[in-house]
Image (cartoon, rainbow, N blue to C red; front, side, top):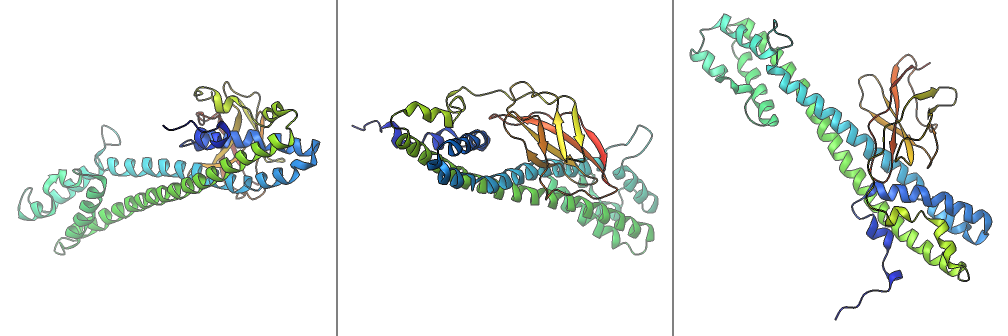
Length: 326
């Protein structure tokens, strides 16, 4: 008959954060300053604090990489989908879609549904709109090639170049989507490796604290916010309200911490880029200061905003501030 393991034999940090990187991030952010404070009061915690703190920089790097890859993948996916769907979408009621324009150009050069027309568009316009996104990309490239073969009709050859340019632009967006997806997978794997290392480290911190404070074991609860391990699932926090950007101090600040939020996260969007997570504030702090390795290009206008977070995840974006770097 299996026996229940002694409660300290199970790593509660490992179990509680299984499949929940966000929760581990919140536990870590809460635990480290508490451990640093314990080291100030009792030097026997100094090495423990330093060893735990060594995991902070790689955690922040991986967490930012995952957030940025996820945002980039979403942005690239939307741009790619818009590009492909835009092929058959009218800009307005009085303007043809690109596909309608291409079809009309072909019909002005050769008989509609004749041998050459059927060769170019075997299933009519549906030749370029049916199937998966990748199948539609392949169909676009093949269509462009068939057009450029019509050397007796220079207009069709020129149209072939137009179609090829469209297909190339769409492929670049597809490639960006794939690249961000790969980066996201790598960042998540790195975070998972760090989650396990952190869980093991904190489990060891429990043992050290129990040994050091054996005469007052309840002091161990000062090293963690136990509600993060015990509380039911949180709801996503509300978005931040009015936000202030101060270029001199490179900081974004909110007037108050939104409902259910524990921390604030700074984001930006530069011209032609993808949203980028810059830094995460300390628990309870209203200001997020950007690290020194975050640079801005003079003359470019950036969108800056805050999001709030807790163990559940991040809120919707707060108000956007426009700033032209100098």
